[in-house]
Amino acid sequence: MKFNKLYIYILVILFTACEDPIPKEYIPNIIVEALLVVGEPIQNIRITRTQSLFEPFSYDSSLVKDAKVTITDGEYIFNLEYKHSDTIGKSGYFCVDENYHVKKSTSYSLYIELNNGEVITGRTTTPDSIYWVRRIGDYLQYPIDTLKLPSTDSIAWDGGATPYLISVTCLDTLNYGIYLEEPMPQELNRHTYPEIKNEKAYRETCVMSFIPAKKTPVVWRFLKWFGKHETAIWYPDENYLNWFLQNSWSATLEKRFSSISGDAYGFFGSAFVIRDTAVVLKNKP
Image: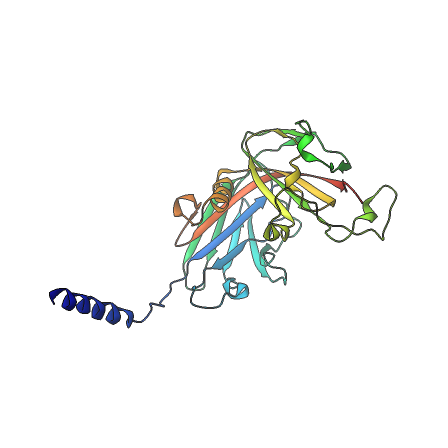
C-alpha cells in the first residue's frame, strides 16, 4: 500500500513538471569572421548573429548589415561597406577603396561598432610570403585504381613555417571537354568514384584541411569531380589557424579560440595564399 502511494506521488510530480512551458527566451551571439589575404582587397568581412532553435532558420536574417566597420594599418583607415549577394557566404563588408591590396608582414586593426553601441575589435599581423617549389602541372591523370599507386610527393612549397592549410576546389562542375588539349565541348563533367561515397560531401565543391608539412602527394579522395581544379596552400596567422581548427574539429564555439575583443565570438586573422590550377582527367570515359 505504501509503495502504491509513493508511485502515485511520483507520477503526479512528473505530470506537473510536464506542464511547465518550454523556455524560449533566447539571447543571440554575434559571430565575426574577418580574414585578410595578402595581395587581395579587403573583402567579405562577415558579421552574423546566431538564431534560436525554436524558430525557422533564415540566413539572410542572421546577417548584420548595419554595423560601422573600419580597418587600419596604422597609417590609413579603410572604411568598409556592406554588400549583399544572393550566394550564401558572399554577403559581407568590403573596403570602399577597391584598389588597395593587403600587404605582407603588416599589422592591421579591426573596429566594429554595432547599432546598439557595442564595440568589437581585433588585431592581426599578416604572414610573410610562401612560394611553389613543385607544381602539379597543367593536367593530372586520375588513375583507374588508386589503391595500387606508389606514394610520391606531387606538390611542394617553401617559405614560412608549418603548419599550413590546403584547399582543393572544383572550378567548374558542369564543363569538362572545353579544358582538354583537344577541346570536346559536348563532353560534360561528372563525379569521381571514391571508395566511400558520401552524398552530403558530394554537394561541396571545396575541400580544405590542415597540413603540417611542405609537400604532399595527391590525395585522390580530395577530388570529388573531374575537370578544372584549383589547389591552394594557405599560410595562416595564429588567429585564423585556431579558428579553422576549432570549426574543423569541434562541435561548439569556444571563446578561448576567438581572437577578437568584445561581446562576440570569431576571429580577425590573415593568410598568405598561393594557388595553382590543373585539369583532372577522367579515369575512364
